[in-house]
Length: 200
Image (cartoon, rainbow, N blue to C red; front, side, top):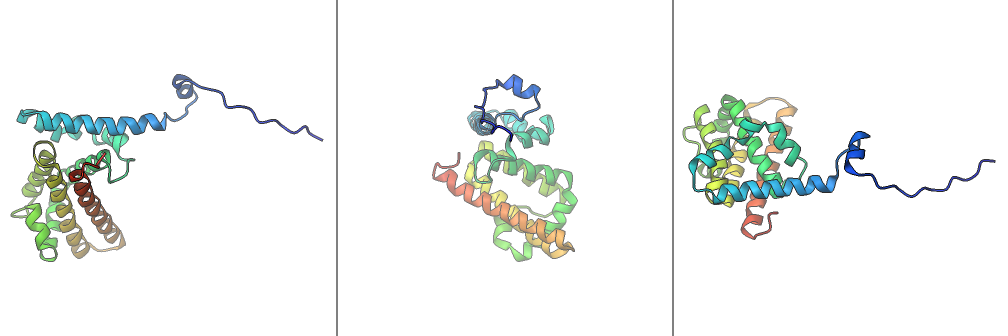
């Protein structure tokens, strides 16, 4: 009969040893990094009075790559500061990558969501205009009222989601429209949290 094995106490491993073993990095450190970088970025942008600094922050994903921002922020909940900044950059990236598709879906959604169209402010709804508004939303996050920028992004998502559900065929389009509606809800809730001083 085999002897019963006694449990061993876990041993401490320093981060370099864990990395050498292929262990994932410390999740607590990743959480702190996500929230700290988001807070510093927003604080820096809101303190800067130089339009060149704001323009550089708006184009941050062009400079360092969307994947880098995803590594930092994409895993955080939607109603947190890193989660909401991730969604703003993701929205801008999508519109920049497919301005014709975004404009087509936006134009189709206007008749269903006229109040949201007024808030989003894409006029007329063409490729250049949706790109301009996506940049304006992110610029507003750094140089204007952050809550208003989030509400404008939410309104944009509502209009596009309605248009996508109307003009795009297939269940995939329906699920994408639902995800955009969820994103709009998260952005609206985050705006309320920001006003209450609770968006961390």
